[in-house]
Length: 308
Picture (cartoon, rainbow, N blue to C red):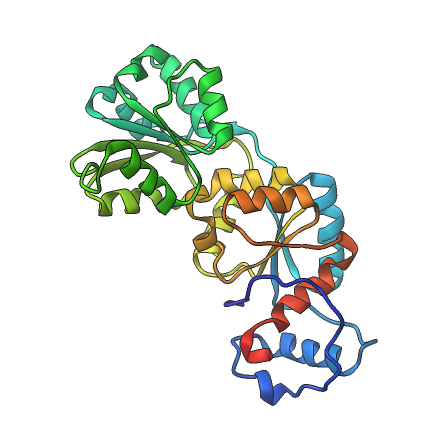
């Protein structure tokens, strides 16, 4: 299923009847349309989420309980695995970048895992943190900045998560719109990330090397599956059960452009803290209690303009 709108706050069901003919132009499976119409016309009827794919990110306990509830409604449920970080299985590109740090003008760290795994490999290759002194360092987000400072790495620039905001921060720091042209920039990233920041910087004239610096020790196949589904518009709804779920998702998928990554996906948070964490990445998610999550997903499907 594709093109599901962003979530809206749950509310009372519309008082009017709605016919399939009114919404058949949506690219929803017939079974979902039938369930939606049945829910509207028969308030006490059971609703099926067959053909709906829901991704849940958060603690193992809360994810399991919520997954069971959605599965009882016939939804396809994927739980974002809680993973232990590790260096990529093939670190050749990372090793080459570290060996040739002198060839870069800037290094951009987008997350705490990027910092930790890059520094781990730096040490394994016999190099020192002081080797980064010859580069200018950019931290994306306050948490990344704090981790770099704890590692006694100087930070020249700290920017927010959105790619365009990062570009603006570079322009403000360097002085003009032509200042990035010809600069060599290194971005350590997750093996699963589709990095949009590099595209923005390259459009501005920089040369960017994005290298895989970390992945998952276990659960890599599940992460790859989620990445493929996101790329193909195959995730209809994403539920963050807590703020850690937000951070894990951002670590492994493009944190600098999550609104693009999740375009067309209905977003929900089961805690206010998770909604606030999501907002830091530019995401607008509805906050709903866990016992209302199933009905909230259906409400999100109904929020599409063609359904109104």
